[in-house]
Picture 1 (cartoon, rainbow, N blue to C red):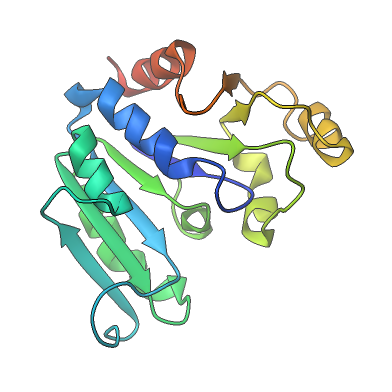
Picture 2: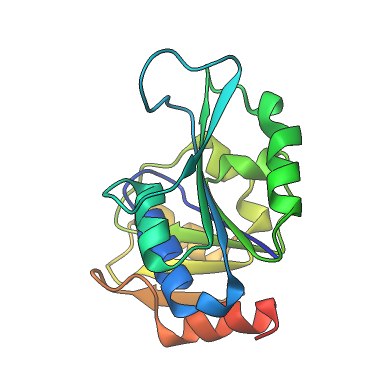
Length: 188
């Protein structure tokens, strides 16, 4: 089972949704992967990507995945944003896991997940091109409970109409209905 958690922009709670799902569904023994176009760590990243396994709980996103109960947690940093270079190693990593959860919309350029959750803050009009490319692949929406902008009213009534929606209010980024939805898709 492959779950991708993405969203139209930064700072909408994608990491918090991943953490919440890992905590709520420990029986999955999740392999959690954060993909970023930015290099983290010492020195220059080896071209064209850098895959690092997180081994300790800390304040990083991948450390938070471990703290939540992930069996394995990885950070995949890209050199120059070259996604094509990481397809093979990522497929090997994910293929070795019964249940994997990946945080990034850009993974949809080369992965076909079983479930794609879009984390949406409809009060923010900032939208990445990578999200627009894959809006038709959204399985379900995790939506902040705020008044939507006109643009989001159109999208929620248009391309996202009919998709299951789960309302969230931070600091709680997962709700019982979302947990049941993902659990049923995982076969739990």
